[in-house]
Image (cartoon, rainbow, N blue to C red; front, side):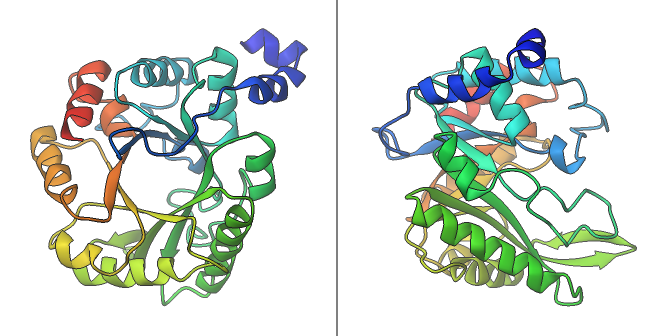
Length: 283
């Protein structure tokens, strides 16, 4: 693959053009299970106790391939570099592929809330024949960069919808504590974040939400009628408890599936297949 990238860069577009696309986002089960791999482009390489767990691209791709081959895994969420590696490896036929768009809010940076669109845009997602795009929206009422972040996400939602593509929005209310940007995971904050995200763009017809499991999920998810996917977050100290939280939230009418990354790709015991299969079983 490295040789192909160096000598035949046109192979990326050619492979994307030949990719067999799935006819719909949701399979026969009405659920959607995606593996997330867009963390490195934001400088977020840690998983569990290892701050550089995702630094080896070959190992990351190996773990992604193992996850994607498991029954019940519908697809992947990633930035162009990761998606194109997987295209060249030939593992995305029949999969749902979501392109990650705004990665400019680098982890730990003073400008983290200024989450600029440095990866895919709607035009490129359509040209690559992907199935949708994902944006991260963090709203900090005290940070003057927040309005630009809102505007950028709204443009992305509108652009994807105009092309008939899913717009996945991951919203948070955030604030700085001891110099670090932290997401407020209280039910009240998530209700507010969901309300803001639901109103982005010129139409919400193609908008999905990507949300964490927090307390009082029934009240939180009542804030919108948009379909939602649950995010996995950090590698859990107690994976069984995390799965129980997913299971309870999946009973809610708008929750349609999971988007999980590090906790499946870098489980504490190292068994990617078992971690993925346990998550699929929840669905």
